[in-house]
Figure 1: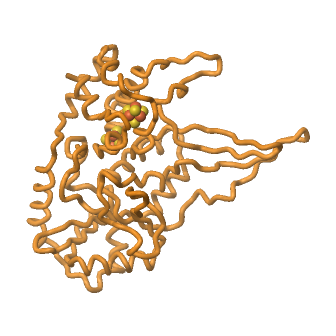
Figure 2: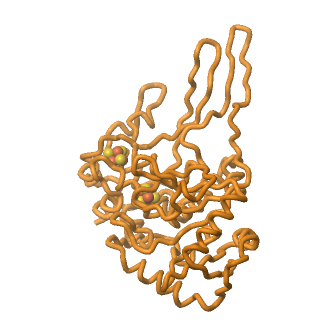
Length: 345
Ligand code: SF4
Ligand code: SF4
C-alpha cells in the first residue's frame, strides 16, 4: 500500500478536485430532490464531495447498472437476429470522488462474486478503469455500523485516494494504492508532503470517528448464532411489517440479484438486466408454479442468512458493509442491524 500523504487546506482541496474534474471523466454526488446520486460532473459547483451519507445513494450503479440493455433483437417468422445495444456497457477511464469508505469497501465484497463461477467482464473493466477518491467520515450517522464488521475501516485499501480532515482546518490527501499513488503524481503541484508527520492526526481523527458510533455489533457471534438457527420463528417477528417493496436491496451497495426481462413491440425487442431482490414474492417462483419462499419471513431469512452466513461461508466475508442505507430507506423502519442481532439473541 502506498503511504504518500500530502497536506493542504479547503482551498487546496477544491483546486485538487477542480483539476481532477477538468482532466478526467468524473462522477460525484449530485443533489436532486434532497438526495445525492453519483452523476457525471464537469464542474465542482454542481456536486458535493462531502454529501451526507444518509442522503447519498451508493455508487454501485456505476459498476452494476440499475437497468441495462444487454441486447436488441428482431424476431420474425424468417428467424431471429440479435444485435449489440447502442449503449456502451464499458466505461472508459474515470474517477469517482466523494464515495464513502463503506461504499468503496462494498466493491471488494462484490469482486468476490463477480470473479467466481462466471467472470463478469463488464464489471471487471469498470473496476479496473476507475480511480476511487473517498472522504473518511468524521462522524457516524444514526444507522451506521461499518466499524463493527469484518474489515479494517482505518486502513482500508478499497479506495485509491483517501481524504481526511485534520486539525486546524488541515486536509490530508492520502494515496492508498499503487494506482492511487500514480494518479496523484499529476496533481501534487501546490500540495505539501506530510509523509510520517500526519500519522498522529490521522489516528486521532479515526479514533474520534470510531467513538461516535451508536451501533456496535459482535459480527462473529451473529455469524455463528445465525448459522445454527435457520428454523427459529423469530424471523416471522422481525419481518412482520415488511411490505416486500425491495427498496432495501435496491439501495444496498452489496446486493447483486438481478432479473432478465424482454420488452418486445411487434418484431423488435430489447433484453434488460435489472436489479431484483430476494424480498420479491416472485423471486423464486418457478415455471411450474412452485415457490420455495412464498412467505415473507422466509425471504427475510434468506436476506439475513445470505448476508451474514452463506456469503461468509463461501467467500469469507459478510455481504454487508454496515452503511445503514437499507434502514434509512425502508418505508416501515426495518433495520438489518436489529434483525440479525434480535434473531441471533
Ligand atoms: S444490508 Fe444494509 S447496512 Fe448492509 S450493506 Fe446493505 S444497505 Fe448497507
Ligand atoms: S425496504 Fe423495508 S419494507 Fe421494503 S423490502 Fe426491505 S425490509 Fe421490507
